[in-house]
Image 1 (cartoon, rainbow, N blue to C red):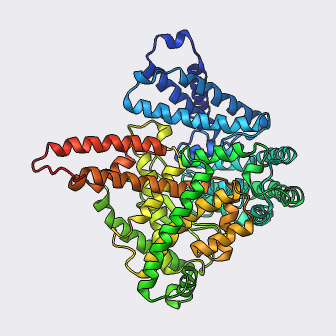
Image 2 (cartoon, rainbow, N blue to C red):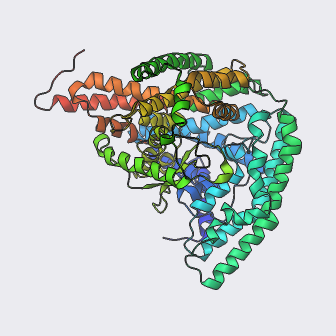
Image 3 (cartoon, rainbow, N blue to C red):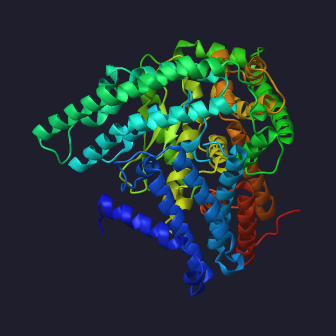
Length: 613
């Protein structure tokens, strides 16, 4: 059944209002029904409060709106989180089904994490949702990059869709003004991002801050055939788009660019690097560490894990280097290989073709490793030029199946990667990494909507790093160069544990962190600087990859040891993915239960062999 925008918003408000009532209305319902109502309340809240995210996921009820980022909206969302968490806490866990218990645990953790971060801000107008961040611009993302994603991902099947997109562009000035006011509040309160990571942001805004915006990516929906619009209508829509981009969007971004250059950067250059030295102190980085890793490990403990992993992978790298007869360092090996003409691409299109070739070879190997594969396809696109040296990434497809997932390949600099460096990256970002896991979760119809779209960094990035380790079983990494590259990727993620905690807990300098990455992971100095700036900008996020991968590998080893010849890798992978994203401790509980079920199943089969202790 289709509903118009007005009808869908009314429905959302009814859900938010009716489900929010307590007392007698709930007394006639069981805990299972009550919990289902609270889940529906959360899902309606997400769609209503964050319309851009809803669009990207394939829900189009609010395609004509941008997120309200005013102070009042931030506090409204904080109050909602606190109230909903209190309501869910009254649900008797024992009265729920197994999957409902998992959903309750996941939703309560998600809400508790947001409440924990918000409590560290006190009465300041910041929150724990991404839209409510005290630093809405960074070299990695911001309103400009989100608008480009919307231009690429929005539905354009009739005139109304184009009108919705234009309505969103029309709201850009108000949104940016609210964000700049928030950044002023942050400066006054001492919540300031360090200068180095912010230096690149004004330049990234340049293409949005002049009339050139009307010939850039935000104009792309009007550059080709228009579905459901006649020729005269197409030109009228394009003309309106050019006007709103040049008269409203460009001036708004020009104002943001001036603010960053004249107000924010002068304050940021004096800001400390360590998140532990922000106004909330060490509690802030502790909270981020727990949230990103989903563990109770302290930054100091994670630092030591990183050091052990660096030592272990370094030994394996040296073994392979020795086998090739190369006597230099990992960095010297990579530099020498990148200088080899056979490893270089002559054009951006040739690099895209190279990635697509790897993708087709990877696709063909998936049935050997997975019993269940997602239906949603994926593609490979060139990253926009304005993103410069940003790292390659995956952009999820939509839940309605009308938009594929995409690997965004950075082809802006052909010297960035040699051919031998592409396999592990492609596996991480597409299959069996991010695309397989995210698309698979979206298609588990038995799970509630919020779990199908849940992003738990330790699980998602841990899975993608684990996916890289499957390359050998998939017939990839056949050359010493590609094997070295896979191990380089692994040691880089191990080094992140050391560097992130070094910066934010041990007061490392930026130069100290860069040098450690260059010396340990063998990366180029410019790339290391960009990576360190990323860790400074998003404290704790870099810890998730290796911690998640280590847990998945440990669970696989445990299952193999306990099941012996009865261990089925395809069934193990399904077990890891079947419940959607999970915190690492919950994942461990689920895999332990799966191992017991597999053992019981094996015992009943003829010829059962007891695994050796």
